[in-house]
Image 1 (spheres, each protein chain N blue to C red):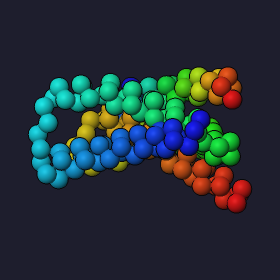
Image 2: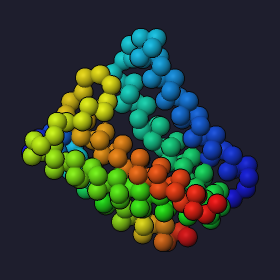
Image 3: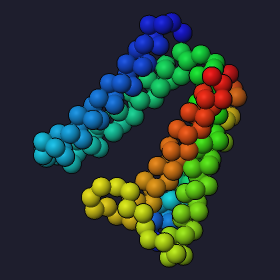
Image 4: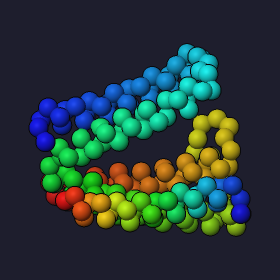
Length: 136
Length: 30
């Protein structure tokens, strides 16, 4: 893994993030109406670029940084799953209302999926920061 | 089962599968 290919992997991921931000801004701020087929056509292309960039980026990471990510996804992600599982039970037994974590009107299905993803990413970020804090 | 619980259960099940597959993959390529 050369430094050049490592940079290519990182640039690929930054490029993807920039495209995502640009699309969201064009749709929600500028008010551009994208045709329905565009998302379906773009999805597999973006998925392949994401997979290749992530692979390159991961191969170029040093062992310490890899360990931080593995620890964070395993423990932080699992902790997030635990929180999401508890929310699932509480919402399904109607003890609490569906958490409205997405802006605008969304289906309950989308809110359920978003709740799980947010819980996992939050757990990951906390665990990742904690790992670096304890290894500083 | 409510749509919220269905979506959450699907993602949690998927996450557990990926946790297993990911752990196995990392074990193989390390």
